Amino acid sequence: MEEKFKLKNQLCFRLYTASRLLTQAYHPLLGEHGLTYPQYLVLLVLWEKDAQPVNDIAKRLLLETNTVTPLLKRMEAEGIVTRSKGKEDARQMIVKLTKKGRDLQKKLTDVPETVGNAVICESVTPETFPSLFEMLDDIIKQLK
Amino acid sequence: MEEKFKLKNQLCFRLYTASRLLTQAYHPLLGEHGLTYPQYLVLLVLWEKDAQPVNDIAKRLLLETNTVTPLLKRMEAEGIVTRSKGKEDARQMIVKLTKKGRDLQKKLTDVPETVGNAVICESVTPETFPSLFEMLDDIIKQLK
DNA sequence: GTTATTTATATCGTTCACGATGCAAATATA
DNA sequence: TATATTTGCATCGTGAACGATATAAATAAC
Image (cartoon, rainbow over the protein chains, first blue to last red):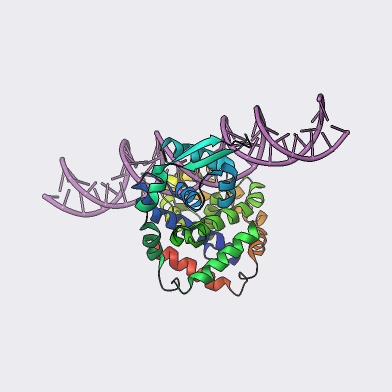
């Protein structure tokens, strides 16, 4: 068998698995508040800057609007955000946090640290984070 | 705004994005042969060792059987694998490659290198691969 | 040997991802 | 100012992921 096809030599499988497992680590923490991980990402974006059009949120997360639109509709149904037509550009849908959406930040205050601690291990520590971040950022920049 | 909630400080978002983008890089190469990325992963497993029960494949990929079963059924419908009841243990479904499934390896011979080259950049090179692999493997081991 | 438990797989429902396509508003062009 | 193109968002269909649950076969306990 050819070495190049072995699972242990695949970068993508590692990224795919690490991503899934780390997302699973968020699950109990977010599920408690009725959130999914992609919805949490939308909240991160809106907490940084409220009242953004769908397109800006999608671009920030490197997702397509056909992924983000239904996701936002579910968040609207949960009362976490509102969606309203843009005033200057009627094509845009402006997404805003509700009070419930803003208040979630305080309720989730421990989430980043809890998940951060869960990954700390032999080769992944606060010291090696910058190196890992740099490599992942470069991969993303390269493929974008 | 709290630094800990900023998107740029999230490991999970990087893994999630890098995983999605790298999977997208496979898409045109695999789609040409009617394959999806998770189906390609199943092929990697079966090319290493043919005739495995569903559970062994799922464990190897760290997936649940409720993800793998429908995936295998689609591959069976495509004539890539066969699924047959185990002889010693009638609960098991043994998955075997068909000739079409085996022949796909030759047809996909350039895929690993093509995708591998696509990620090469400033901080990610054949020299830094071992370090990146080690960190991702440790994260996976830690969360598993 | 009968009953209980575990194991292997499958089914169901919900939520992403994402290619393809549609539509209306805004902008560019003739 | 008509017409063409672009842009922003939405709809649709398919294939994962995954929690919850079901079913049948194998194994353990009684």
